[in-house]
Image 1 (cartoon, rainbow, N blue to C red):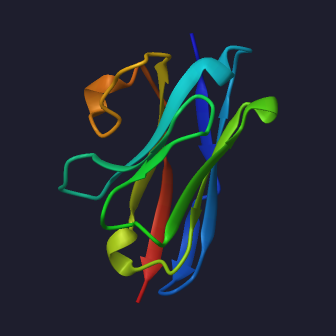
Image 2 (image 1 turned 180 degrees about the vertical axis):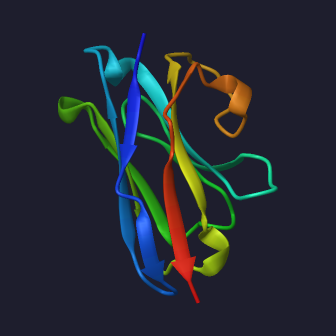
Length: 126
């Protein structure tokens, strides 16, 4: 079992930057595909970004492409989400998620992931 703990959220102005971190327990972190999702009030949880177990492949939602970067450090059991050029519409609770290794999976689907963190709030003021 994997426990995920997000950090790095906060209040930032329009155009600012934040870096979210998600620390995982367990030595099997390097075998998990990882994802970031977000949920704004009244909205469904939506896909933001994903990275494969090795870090060799990444995927982004169109709304964040070119502004956000997902990365991981398997030695530190941590996945990151660097968020630049933040907009008020990026305001949400951000969640990281983990999926046990599979050669084929759907990284944009919430149901793909086995484990979820508790979330961290990101608020972008205009």
